[in-house]
Length: 113
Image 1 (cartoon, helix red, strand yellow):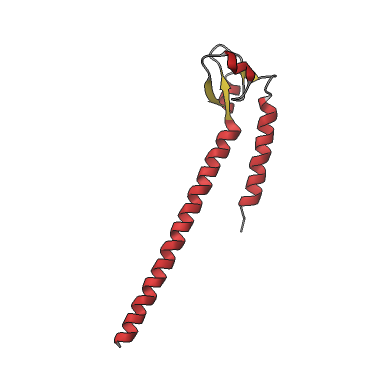
Image 2 (cartoon, rainbow, N blue to C red; image 1 turned 60 degrees about the vertical axis):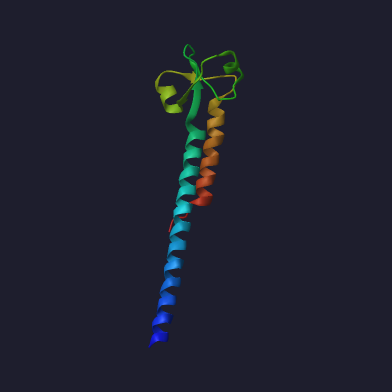
């Protein structure tokens, strides 16, 4: 009887360890996906404007080199405030490429069951 109790206790401990490990792995994957999503959202939606400018730019735009003050803004906000895309850095073309990367990422990582 003692042997069965010890065996049962060991089996229960192993089962709990497996469940905890699986839960930790699942939590880690959820955090990784959330971090990836945050990064992708930021890549796709952030542009840069100057206080007196009328255009929105990519962070690497040469036009911004001449500005001492540059604000980061969400693309949708920039458009709704009347900003237009810069012709030098072409943020709309970059947004399209990044959107295609986001779509491809979703295709390869999201499984619908």
